[in-house]
Image (cartoon, one colour):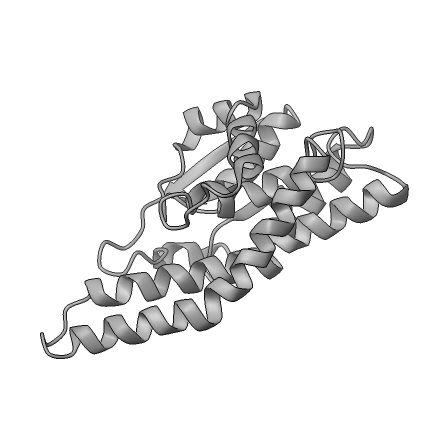
Length: 221
């Protein structure tokens, strides 16, 4: 039996989505975030030492990290290459976007989220304006100059292709879904109509709809 250890409102929804697309039988063990700091509970460390979700168990095998889980599931359960190209430029594009999601895009979005939350934290009133100014400067001078080109690159790619790896929906689209969907309220995407249409297309996928029924939808970051 395949088991997904799913932390609420997290990347692990993508794993459930992929399992739905592969039409595999699985069970979900759900975990709540710590209400104080939104971290994963200590009980996840019994499954994997770092205690982070997603974690997938397949019999005696334990796999962590979204990208590694996706590659494992496709190697084990997608012999007909339904959700990945198998040759040529399409395969190279697929691999690039599969790793771009977490390696390039997500770190900037997480940094942006953390900085935006700084003024919301309790602090002396005379410190808050300084903290807000520093947050704004870091975003303007570091994050946004790096994030905007990435979004423009995705936008241009989607102007040429319906899906990231080409004409066919793939696991790379599932992988990049979280940073794009979960950032909508924190990042102004109005200048990126292809990305907005792409998000709608992702949300219309049967596997995504079924995953939402199983583990809930993304909340915005």
